[in-house]
Length: 333
Ligand code: UDP
Image 1: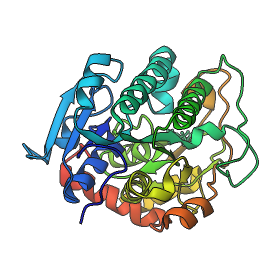
Image 2 (image 1 turned 180 degrees about the vertical axis):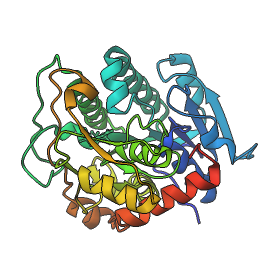
Image 3 (image 1 turned 45 degrees about the horizontal axis):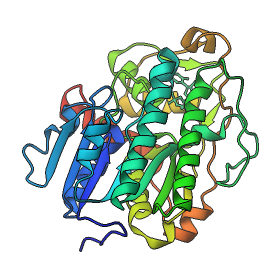
């Protein structure tokens, strides 16, 4: 049975609902019996991500940007719960177009929060593990310090824009906005952009299937905790529905840490590819001054204790699912 919302209204709004995580969230909400409205400008979202839903009666798709105030205001009609996922995402996009990143992630979020607040809707804001930057206080705790580099390194603009959004959420909460924040840790799964913007896994799988070298940046000893999308969606839903989540920020991350070199080897094993592994310098990939997060590991206790959520799908299992979805979809998964 579907849960009722803390906010007023029956409809669920998913901004960025045609994106990778957003479309999986839409699937789940529809399966749970909710009516869903999507806003997406299809900049990184794709028609194909929602195509399997056809003309689903409980789904409404609005094409446009969260920077469009009239569109956002109109989209709030009858909405009790908002999942705000629309954003400029993916390190490669962020580095390539820093202004678009900052505008979308700051003005867009401000508009969504303003309109949700005006309508009395509850909000889940999709944040990121990037906000911890290069902190070495591992694992990253929700109440830990953030350590970022200089302002001319565009990567940190993404981190800062998402942190500003979190500040806005907490500030609105002071005025009564019912909100929760989820900080995603390297979410992966079917429907990632196959070009690999935003995910090393998508990139390695595409490279492996094409028989091209897998491009490992630097020494490949940097680590990430890859989180399977269905589990990230479950955590997101809990953040939107459970009373305990109100006013809280949560890491949504797997506890399993893998280095990138090992990931490349796991992708080769899963795909059966004979591609070589090629180490390339960071500068070649992201330009001068780029600084990577050496280890990124979430503290998982808060969300486990408060929302009863813990990631359990191992990387090898997730990779197998990604591959099956790609095979089923031809090349577009
Ligand atoms: N990475 C890599 N080769 C690639 C793309 C990414 O070695 O072709 C590395 C990247 O430098 C980082 C890690 O993989 O250390 C994760 O990158 P991704 O873009 O998936 O997400 P991030 O964690 O950097 O936001």
